Length: 166
Image 1 (tube, rainbow, N blue to C red):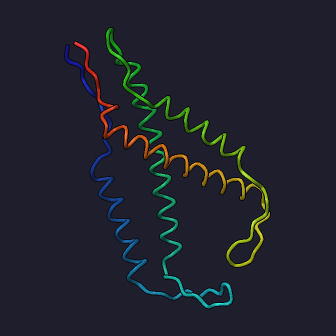
Image 2 (image 1 turned 120 degrees about the vertical axis):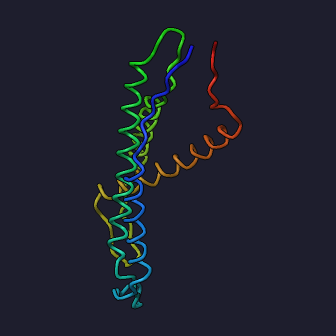
Image 3 (image 1 turned 90 degrees about the vertical axis):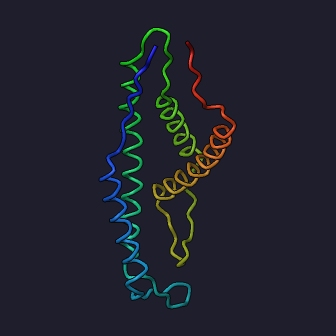
């Protein structure tokens, strides 16, 4: 019995555009020079001209990545629901990924602290929301790195290989 594997692929021209924009931003960041002078910890420091542009582009790439993963996961999940036939198993992990992510963010939120912290320039951060979001992001990154390492090892061992029943 032949099954059709429907996959959604990002068009290569979109990836090309993102690559070109990233290359331009990196050339601007590293090639234009240092012109912004800031005073921190009793020293005058200079940073590249386009540091802000680089940070904004990195935030945009993270947003694009998150939206595409969630979007493709939802679309593939619905396609797997529609194409299920007798004797076939669903192969999508989208539901498990969403559940794990939700639990991870909830646990990270409840583990976060609102104790004021001093930044590098000596300024005291007192905003509870800013402190909690920072902690949630850090805890989530730590947990996702551990999960990524475990999944990489399991994948190399062949645990996630597709098993076809005839």
